[in-house]
Image (cartoon, rainbow, N blue to C red; front, side, top):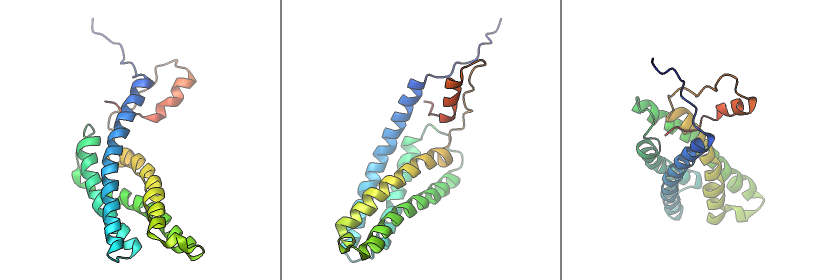
Length: 178
C-alpha cells in the first residue's frame, strides 16, 4: 500500500534559522557594497562632485556588486530562469532604495542645512546619506529582492486541517526553505 501521508510543515525554528542564514549572507554582500559605496562617495566628494550626483554614481557601482553577490551567493538556491528580468527588477527596486537614501540626504543637506549649516558638511552628509538613508533603504531592498527579484517559487505550506488559529496566522511569513 503506498504511503499517503502529507509532508509535515517545517518547524518555525528551522524556518527562522534559514531566514537568519539568508540575512547574514545578504548582510555580508551589503557590507561589501556599503564599503564600496562609502569609498567612492567620499572620493567623489573630495574631487568636488556635487553631493547628490556623487551619491548616485557610488550607489550604481555598489548596486552592480550587490546584484552579483546576491544572485550568485545569497539567493543562489532560488530559481533563476530569466536573468534579464532579475537584473532589470533588481535595478528598478534599487533605484527606489536609492531614492530613499537620496531623500534622507536631500532633506538633511538642502532642507535642514538651510537652517543649520552644520548639516551641509561631509560628516553630516555621510550620516544622513550613508547611515540613515542606507539603513532605511536596506530594509526596503531586503524585502523587495526576496519578494520580487529572487522569488521563492515553491508553493506555500498549507496548514493541516483542524489546525489552531495560532499556527494558521504564521503561514503568511513565508520564511525561506533550505
